[in-house]
Image 1: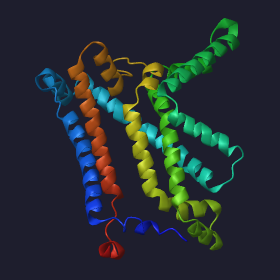
Image 2: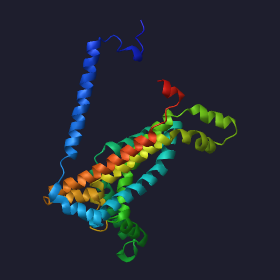
Image 3: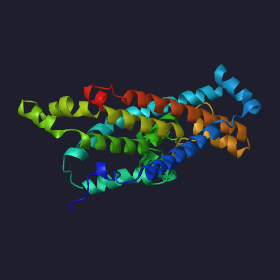
Image 4: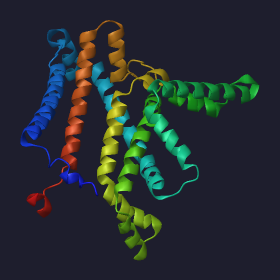
Length: 293
């Protein structure tokens, strides 16, 4: 005897059971919404009036906000440049050592971000020591030293720390988008004379714009709030590498909980605005099929 289709699984529920099920779901949603609203309602009020005034007047907090947003944007662009072809390759081709590549991508997501920061700092420190050993008369190799000075405790180091984790999220999103795309469109394009790249560019990629947008938003929002790798590899130098997450940590360490809460609310507000924008961007107008459903 065949099991009933998925759409008919709940048809056997009585009306009272269906109402109870809907009530439980609604209650859970209300509890979740109440928790979010109660968090947002904990306004620092008078204690952080100076903080908000400084933010609006273009003080150091504004610079940290702009640095956070700017580095996250650069990271997202670079991550998508890598994630689009990588996601396509993982979805469409049998790559030698594909299991190993998948493992490394997943490891960048699931491993604690602290490990990424420590690994980066150890790698660049070892590279610097190697340059000193290979340099003339014990002096550091100029090229290796220039790379070290360009990234470590500098703004490009923020982007590199964000890039390691953000790219893995973007690759996962793009692979899922290409998996969901209709491969027959590419096959038709190939039979009509398109090259492999032409089929990718004209047939596959246009089907994945929503996945690309979702992956970019995930990478961007994660990069804005990334703390541990940025703190370890780029530091928290005021006016140079201090971003909002590191500023929040520093305020907590000195006991300024109200300021830390204000910074948290600021980052939460930015994330909410971005998510709302994503939902509007992904919302499709109701067509003839949607109108009748």
